[in-house]
Image (cartoon, rainbow, N blue to C red):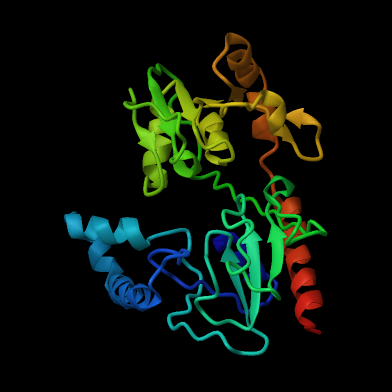
Length: 303
């Protein structure tokens, strides 16, 4: 979402981010939700008013504020109040948000992952514009034209290999795979999940030799390969490597192993250089944001 916001602003569009501590689900009590939002928003504003003090501080409280609020949204405009009823204002919700808690007139649902509310007619509005991040995530009933907006961000200054020496051990990625039934009871290495800072992720991936990912669709497998760690997709029951052919390219993602066989490990090693050469996303992002603007102009009759 933050990358879309940045690219829209570069096009001269007044795009802003609206911070919420959690997203509304089907059973969310909206009165309680807004009470928690007000509480966290006060913390958010307080932190940014006094960020210079917190950045110097080593206290646990300072770390809490940094971890909770110092996202990649830094430098972007933020909408502090939940008023979005201007006739030309568009609100973009990811697929995890249930309903239209901001009561926006013009709503875009961006399916960044599979639609968890598939078949629920009250989850999204009848007049919402539905687009997908990748065609594999699309819901054809909601988006029969398969409108797609794919944006990719890669911070070369942050995500890089600095350990070219000894490595040992495993690490694990959960994220969107955190609810899988085949998760091990115990992990023999650090676990990367929501809330793990990018600095910690880079450090872990520069220390470990292998990274087992239970999230089969995460960009952090690319980060692992860049950092010199071998990423291994842990296939779900009933899935094979052929279920992960890269869209429009008729091949598997380079630099990544699908399962931990010796053949797959060698594939990841031998194709890593191809992955590193593919990390210029400027053309993809230019096309993606132009498509987004075209879709909303057509849907909401903006001229």
